[in-house]
Amino acid sequence: METTAEFLQVTTSLFDLLIKYDHLAAYYLGYELWNQSVINKIREVEKNQWHNFFLVSSGSLNDRILNINKSWYFFHYLLTGYKALDKPDNFNFFHPLISINQEDKLPFINAILGGKCLFYGYYILVRYLTSNEVNQITDVLSELELFDVIERLDTGEYKDYIYDSLSDYPYYDALVDYYKDAADKGNAMLLWLN
Image (tube, rainbow, N blue to C red; front, side, top):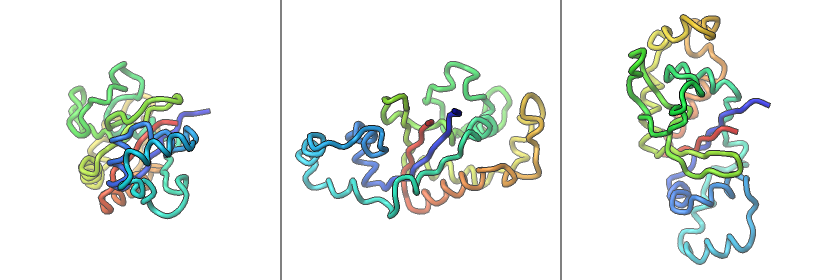
């Protein structure tokens, strides 16, 4: 089974709770089952804000998650110039979100593996982007053209992946639209590999 990348928009009120109580993310994402003991502890601490945890968009959690399948490998390379496991520090999420790749001097947009760690457990690392960071990435992705990063595809294993535009790549438009939707709503984002 291949590793897939998943993204989930969260409201700012929910985001604030998840940051304050990072262990809630495991429950929220379904990696750990809710139990009455956990609920009672949280209710005791957050008597006035507990309702915020349930203030999310309608529909099931799975309906709101964007899964770009295993195309995340390609998109991470296309947007940053690095293969996901090229260097040990590639999973060091202290990379800037947006900059210039110092090796190829092309844009570096950490839209796939960016963010800060929210929690690690259950064989999963969940990262987050604040609403401001979602806006920054959205602005850059909205302006990005294939011409800006095509040099990365000229050599190596991706030379057969050269198309006419970024929209020709499966999942690319869905990824950009998801970021745009989150930015329009002022939402933060959770990101993880599954």
